[in-house]
Length: 327
Image (cartoon, rainbow, N blue to C red; front, side):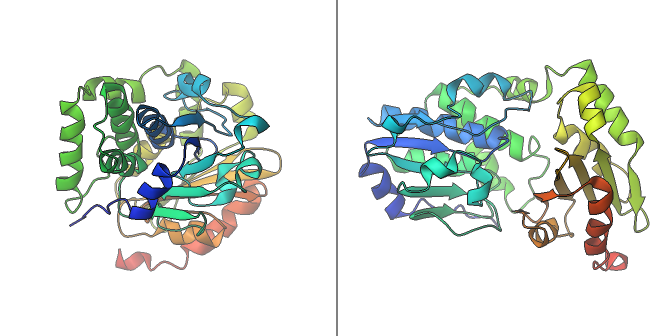
């Protein structure tokens, strides 16, 4: 049974002792990262703090693209003096992206729910069993004596729904606490119907055609228990950066007998972004860690120099170490 970790006293002190905050998250943000940043920034402003949002971007995902206007990708030097930094949903400094070089000398607090990563930050609030960083931010807001307003509640629910696959990934051990939090947020005015529409609507036809192209090349391994799909630079150039990872993972994980899924994307001529998902028993975070990445047992990823045809066999070598017959 999951028992949420309460915000530590030194984090409350960190907030109370500061007057100006820069709030950052990981590069290529998702709904949980953006929802955490937006909700915390709003709450801290109501708490009497001066707050600035920053992100290295890019905002590739359809469901978060309209939030780009609220974030700085370049931080003016005049904002640095006297500021403190809170980094959300980011297990490694490198994942903050290009803006970290401006933030690295500031007093830092880290709020994160990833199981593996780098230990950094003056103050750390980490709960590897939490389904989202937004739930941790929700707890922090309440620990500061505040109640989320309607907009903050929507940001928090959006992050929870995004990282849980709209609750598809919540097991029985976490369900009571998670749905208790979801009920609290709903009582504050959140419409689950609206959030589901935000997550799944607004897609382009090209994004669906890109899914079809990637699915058409998917290959199964180890008796159908692993599926690997690839996206080339040529496909990205043809269909645009119409990324819809959640839909792709959902389609591949729905295949009978599949225990794990890997998606290898050629992000540039020099490097690939690799996403890994599993149903339950396969620890994909340990595989991601082997390549310098991180994440959760059932959801992880990494960025690695190389081309698809070079990385594909290296990734398979790591999966070969699993005793597939026991699954």
